[in-house]
Amino acid sequence: MQNKYRKMYNENLLGTSDVSILKFYYASFKVQQQKGKTISISAFLDDCAKISEDSNRILKVSSVIPFFNLFFGTGREQKHIVEIIRTKHEEVEKLFMQDDISDEAIKSILYGISPLTQANSLTKEDTIQVVKDKILKYYSIKGRKQLGDRIFGYLLASELIPAYTPEDRVQAWKTLIGEKIAPSDTKLHANPSLNRSNVDTKTLLKHLDTIREFYSEIGLGKVVSVIKKDMENLSTKA
Image (cartoon, rainbow, N blue to C red; front, side, top):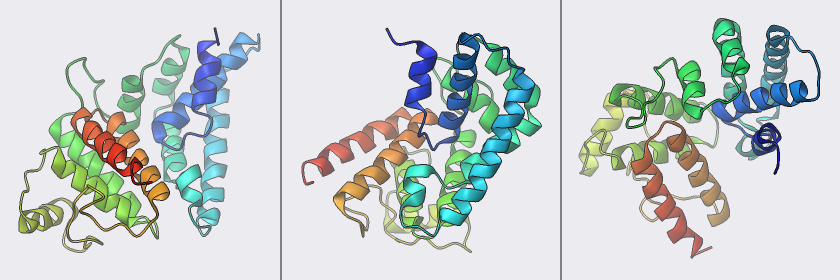
């Protein structure tokens, strides 16, 4: 059976989300420990912060390459990891000292919220704020606004924000995002058959999988189910 830390290392090697990056660093630390190396957690985390900082610079320069960010992240995730390691150094150290870690514990450090319980995900307010931050992130990246539109559409699908008419959807956007940033598609649906799609099916499926992973990380299972169904329907047309 493959060692659990080596498995986690391999699974998160190319991860682009905040959670995946921190899990990769954790697994790297544990793998080195298993090899008998005496490592200072503090020094290791300092090295991780430096790596993320350097990666952030590279990703900013490489963002001019079409779809580069799709596979390697936007750089914002790396910047966030740097900030977390440097501002919550002791908390991250304690996390890395544990033999097992959960996504909930990682999200607690990353998003500044209490760990998730078995029955609950984030509070409604926390969830909406995290989604808003994600939308604004994609709106700051050229060519990625459509992902922000779909993330918002799936938020409405969860009914955390009630909006059922075209007017309701636009007003909900203005309330959450503000009037200075207009949606790139005023329909604001999530479903690929309803919302604008100016990419090929293969790329659109990758977009939806990215959104599915995001909603899975913040524990919004209702939306994850909707996205999976949309992906299944889209796959039959690929």
